Length: 353
Image (cartoon, rainbow, N blue to C red; front, side, top):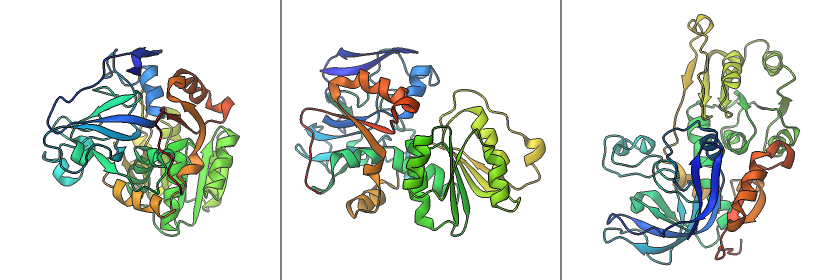
């Protein structure tokens, strides 16, 4: 089969590699019909995730058809169309029994495209299939469903829920890429008073406004001062960091009010300074986290009911074999306007809405 293979920082290529096979009785093999590129994949290519070894197939998001199952798989069968979760769960360890699947001790967690071969390929092996994939309703489009592999659960769990968004809150989302935009959309579920989106790209700020941001601020326009003015000098109750660089994290800690929450979602490859000399007295809660995907069933129900604006985030579509061109488009998002770049295999499902 063909797959996008990581060869070291700054190096990847669309290569011919061996087809995956069943290795454990709880595995399935999925033919990838839709996959996508995540900002985390760009972090891997930058060298920010050193655990990824050269030779690994990248990608952790997919929708596809089950083509083979291990002997112990019970909940899905050959021919089923499934959403592949970015997190794999053994279901038995200390953390999985508490729905903290991202911290799985049983060889799960974030492994696809990280510790084992991932989804940017024609076929992928999915461990712990009974807990790591979700069968899809016929009415749900594959191109919409794939956005629930990672970005919607991540934004919702690590951003909105960890940030404790409440009705009437001022919520600031720093970074209007796909994760930040999904945070804007899911924060609206809690009826905040104001949502402020901050980014450097005007196209992404326009997208944030379409998805529900009440105020958009270009990052060159002193967003800390804008938030202070908006809140009478108090700062925001919730600030969600969705970029992953030291400067934006430090900006978030300057925007939050005493007693507020900073929810860090971004993937950081460099140290960020924590100004405890200012924060120690302010009762500020700072959370970090890897998504657990415990919310995926709820989000899938919302998607099927037309309550999630998944289609709004997909701006570019390529054939799977055009993945190198797709990476270039996604990497140059400031120029291309790319939000989520979708890659479709030859057998992509396209059921009627």
